[in-house]
Amino acid sequence: MNQKYDFTQALAEADRCLLCHDAPCSKGCPANTDPGKFIKKFRMQNIKGAVRTIKENNILGGACGILCPTSKLCEKECASSHLDRPIQIGKIQEFLVRHGRDIGFKVFEKPEATLEKVAVIGAGPAGLSCGAELAKKGYNVTIFEKMGEPGGVLRYGVPSYRFSNEYLKAELEDIISLGVKFECNHPIKEEGEAEDLLTKGFNAVFIATGLWDAVDIFDKKPEGVYNSVEFLSSPHTGRLDIVKEWIKDKKVAVIGGGSVAMDCAGYAVTLGAKDVYLVYRRSFCQMPAEKNERIESLENNIHFMILNQPKDYVTDVNGVVTGIKLIRTELAPAQGSQRRSPLEIKDSEWILDIDLVVEAIGNKAFENSNKLYPGVDVDSRKLIKASLSNCRTSKQAIFAGGDIVRGPSLVVNAVQDGKTAASTIDSYLKQRRD
Ligand SMILES: Cc1cc2nc3c(=O)[nH]c(=O)nc-3n(C[C@H](O)[C@H](O)[C@H](O)COP(=O)(O)OP(=O)(O)OC[C@H]3O[C@@H](n4cnc5c(N)ncnc54)[C@H](O)[C@@H]3O)c2cc1C
Ligand code: SF4
Image (cartoon, rainbow, N blue to C red; front, side, top):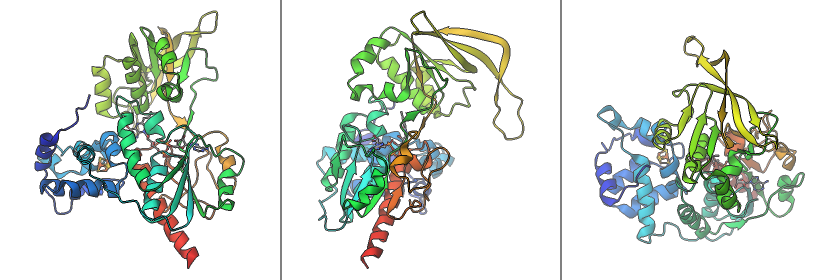
C-alpha cells in the first residue's frame, strides 16, 4: 500500500522540484490545482499559503492527492522525469491538506449567501465542487442527494482502505463551512422533477448524478453474482456483515480489468476471501487499470486469469453460482497502431470453480434517468449532452457535468466540471440580473 508522507518526507520531495518557470506540472492538472505554485510556497516554508492554493483551486484537493492517476496527469509533465523520476505531486498535495487540518488551519470563512438559490443534484465530486464554488461567490446552494450521506463514489464506491471515511468527512467539513446545504435521502426521481426545481424557487440547476447502473455481462444473473456497485457500497448500506459472511474463506472471481475491478478484488481480500481471481479477456498490459494498481493487486496475491473470456455461469441445482465457463483467448496479430483484439481459441473451454462472482465491467446511466429532465438532450447512452467548456445543456438554466456527461471518468475531471459549471451559472445569473 502507498504510504503517506510525513513532514520531512514531503519537504524532501518538494526540495527535488526544479521550480520550472513555466510549471508544466500545473498545465497537466485538469482542475488547475496549480502544483507549481503550492510546491514553491511549501519550499519557501509558507505552508498555510500552500494549503490555501490547493484548497482554493480544488475543494477536494486532499481526495485528488490520494486518488488521481498522477502518472498520466501532473506528474507526467514534471521536468524531473527527464533527470530521474517525477516529483510525487499527489503525495505532497495529500500531505499538505492533511497537515493543514492537523494544525487547525481554516482556509475558508463563511461567505454571506446574498445571491440567488441554485440547486445541485448529486453530492459526488462534481456536485460538491460546483456547490462549494457557488457558495464562495455568495449563492444560496442546496445539494439534493439520493443516498443517506454525501460523497458519491468517494463514499459508496472507492473502498475505505484506499480513501477513508474520516478523510472524506474532513473534506466535506470545508464545504459545509462555506454554507452549502445538503438534503440527503432526497432523490430527485419524479418525471420532470429536475427541471421543475426551476419553478420551485431555484434559479439554476446543476445535474451531477454520475453513473450508478452496472453493465451486466450476461442476461442471467444467478444467486451469488453481484455487481461492483452493490459489492463496494456494502459498508454503507448495512450489508457489510452479510457480504463478509459470503466472502470469508471463499473463492471469489472478479470479472473486469479496470480500476474498479482492482478495487473489488482488493476489497474481497480485505474481507477474508480464500482466493481472489481477476478474470480478463485481454492481456495484462492491456488492462485499463493503472500499472501501480495492477502491481499492488499482484502483491496482494490476487490471481490474474488473463486471456480468458467468460462465456456463461455454472450453477448448482438451487441456481447458485458454482463456477464460470471460460474460453481461452489469444491476441490477434498486430495491425498498425490498433489495439490487438482477443480471439477465442477453439475447444479451449474450461470451468473456474468459484463461490462468488463480482461483475466489474463498468457503470452506465440509469435506464430512465433522462425522465427527470425531459427537456435536456441526451445521447444514445443516456449521457447528458453538455459542453465541457461551459457545462451548458440544451435547456436554459440547466447545467450538467461529471460522469453523467463524460461517461466513466476521474474525480479531478468532475471537480473541474463543478468549477466550470459554477462559473457559467454565475455569468448566466449575473446577465439575468442585469
Ligand atoms: C469503484 C470506483 C473507484 C474509482 N476510483 C477512482 C480513482 O481512484 N481515481 C479517480 O480519479 N476516479 C476514480 N473513480 C471515478 C470517479 O469516482 C468518478 O469519475 C467521479 O466520482 C464522478 O463524479 P460525479 O460527481 O460525476 O458522480 P458520482 O461520484 O457518481 O456522484 C453522483 C451522486 O449523485 C447522486 N444521485 C444520483 N442520482 C440522483 C438523483 N436522481 N437524485 C439525487 N441524487 C442522485 C448519487 O447518489 C451520487 O452521490 C472510481 C469510480 C468507481 C466506481
Ligand atoms: S489534483 Fe490531481 S492531477 Fe491535479 S495536481 Fe493534484 S494530484 Fe495532480
